[in-house]
Amino acid sequence: MTDLSDAGASARRAARHVTLFLDVDGVLNSYPVTGLRFLRERRRKVRAWHYELHFRPRVVRFLDRLTRRRLVDIVWLSTWSQRCRTEIEPKLGFRSSFEVIPMPDDTYNRFANDPHEWWKARAVEEWFAANEEGRAIWIDDDLTAPETRAHFEQKYGSRLLMIAPEFAQGLHEDHFSLIRDFTYRRAVPAPARRTLLTSEPTGELAAVQVPAPGLTSTDSLAGDSASVANDFPAGIGTTYHGKA
Image (cartoon, rainbow, N blue to C red; front, side):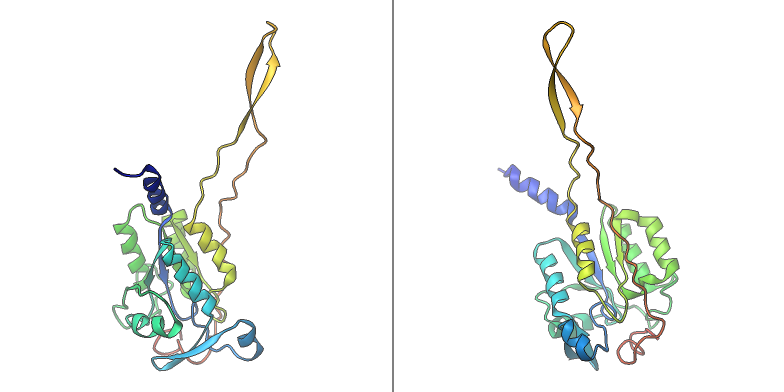
């Protein structure tokens, strides 16, 4: 016999479960970060494939927690392709391994501003077509491309949260609350009603329903206002990863 409380909890988990499409360069890696900033942000550096990466372990831990709590399924959507599993996951310290959508050609991110040509945009479109009720988060520094962003905002609305970190900064704590709110939506409570006793002309006491003071919903998510720098730093992302 199914425990109704367990069934209810499973339904709630399913309602807030989302797929998170995750990029690497400009999101996890922000090379180069030097000097006091490197120390202040508690960055670490590792070598993955032929490159040096500067990342925040706290960001990796945050993403790991989301998957362990079954709030998201992470899918790598990066020009690193299968190297996300062989290089990025072990070098950055992810505890789990995630699905990869590999880059199908050598266009990299050259068509980021064309939602019909960019391979990442086509991959996300295909996911939505296969998941008609699904919700997703897409984190990619190239999502500042105006045509692509407008296309997905208009077509999927509240079903898709797009976060475009600044390349030089990457994903950071200010984005965490946006992600948590999107993955853990709470129902807005209905306005409470209170019962007052009032004397009717008959002299008898009657119950009168009076709405409580208005409760307002603050459900909307603030948009990310970060923008990608026009000139990307030398190093990773300029050749193999198509950031030039």
